[in-house]
Amino acid sequence: MIEFRAVTKRFDDGTVAVDHLDLSVAAGTITVFVGPSGCGKTTSLRMVNRMVEPTSGTVLVDGVDVRGVDPATLRRGIGYVIQQAGLFPHRTVLDNVATVPLLSGWTRRKARARAAELLELVGLPRELGSRYPVQLSGGQQQRVGVARALAADPPVLLMDEPFSAVDPVVREGLQDELLRLQAELDKTIVFVTHDIDEAVKIGERVAVFRQGGRLVQYAEPDELLSRPADEFVSSFVGRDRGYRRLSFVEGTGIEPREVPTAREEAVAGERVAPDAWTLVLDGEDRPRGWLPPRSTGDSAPPAERVLPGGSLYTRGTPLRGALDAALSSPSGLGVVVEEDGRYAGAVTAEEVLAALREHRVGPEEHTGGTR
Amino acid sequence: MLDDLSRYLGSESNRELVLTQLVQHVPLALLPLVVGVVLAIPLGWLAQRHPLVRTALLGSANVVYTVPSLAFFVVIPGIIGTQILDPVNVVAALSIYTAALLVRPVVDALDAVPAHVVAAATAMGYRPLRRFLAVELPLAVPVLVAGVRVASVSNISLASVGALLGVGGLGALFTSGFQTSYLPPILVGIVLTLVLALVMDLVLVGLRWLLTPWARAGGTR
Image (cartoon, rainbow over all chains, first blue to last red; front, side):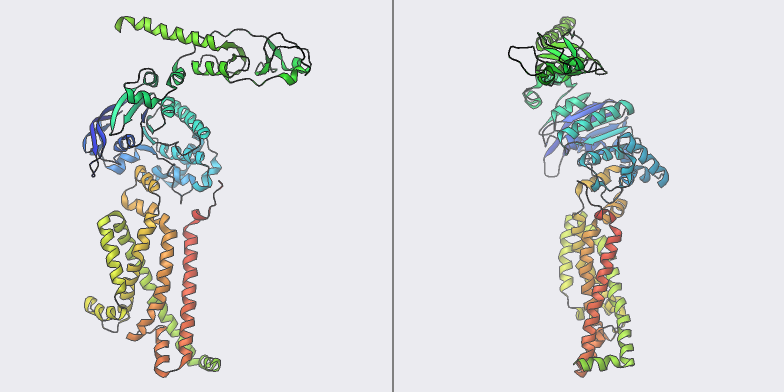
């Protein structure tokens, strides 16, 4: 567990980077510090491993005041992933990953064996180990950065805008990878970002900072989006927070309905002439696209009239996916699939909204007495 | 004139003399280079870490470099207690020049190491000295070698003044040539100085090549 107690950081030029921060980060969770630049989120992070010393107040890691621990020793026990990966350009990927074990006195052979394991853990082929960082893509460098931070198996991981320098598609992959790793490793992670989407995706708890180093709200992502503490938070979390919040609404209320379906082979064999939108399925029941209803004057064979489908909604996942599936489908019917990708039914946008209404009414009734 | 030159080099004793001076010149020029580099690195490290030290050191390095070499030769024996004609005086003076010349390149080379790489090293748990030796210094090599190459050429030519103190080296060929108004030894001295400078430069380029395999690894992006 990491605890900030009345922590203030005032730099020599008088600027207050962090202003009376009281916050505790639960063990085994991902906590995100988010806010605009100059809000003190990185400074706060760096006070955990003494890269920055507080002007007043105390930072505790597992109940121990970090000021009582030798900085180098403290840091070897805390993983750190820096912006732009910060890999050592003059060392091979393998030796980069082996850095902390080597500093902690492991033999070279043992450190390298451990490093090779970690490359695998973060999804990189072992062959990359002998390359230099400059020979990797930005996304690969970030993975190496994460592997290096995990090398000595520290219980705490600090991540300072680790994915901000890579393009959005790669970033999303890295975020998913981090969540997968965390499910496996159960570290205490503090993650700094200026991107609220990243914050609500990654964080189990999100701390929103504002300029002047003040913590304005510390809450779970769902609460942050539904009940922003003030004007600043609501403007910071953005205009489409209502839509984004659907990511946190369980899709249990969705009852997929049956729609007309046809096999790909049947469509190709021109044996289909539907009266309504028909979902085309492949041999394994996976959706392939939509066949529009027959209209007069249609001469093209059915196989050529099949439209690509919208996004697919996996049953039981949050409502955001269901609404998106309905809105992106040419038929207005969002395709619902099972976890293995097989067709399960379809849902309209109206039905998603009804489920949402249900969700909104439900909890209010339960908590009605206390509000 | 070519006749003069071939006659000069035709003599066995002249050739031997030239070789002796060359052999004496190499340590006079290179020993200070090594000492200067070894002095400049910690000085540059200090300068890079503390803004005040930086201003003071870079300023005084400039002043030191403007002191005439002959003045050094006169003053140094008084300071380190050597005889006025001791070759050590030349080595000491040139070492000071080299260090003065190299402090700025060392600072520049250390400044060129990306800040986020240094921060990452700190965060990994490097203590300052080890971080300097294992991360900052190796990454400073490309810029540093550029400075050392200048200092190397400068030393090889400056070492000639040692002849004025009678400590030998290729400078002795110049002094004897001037005294007798005889051109060939001067020409031979100039050519050998150039060749020596060129060879040393190649050695330094080779050294950089050996020390920076990572800089040759082309990016795939």
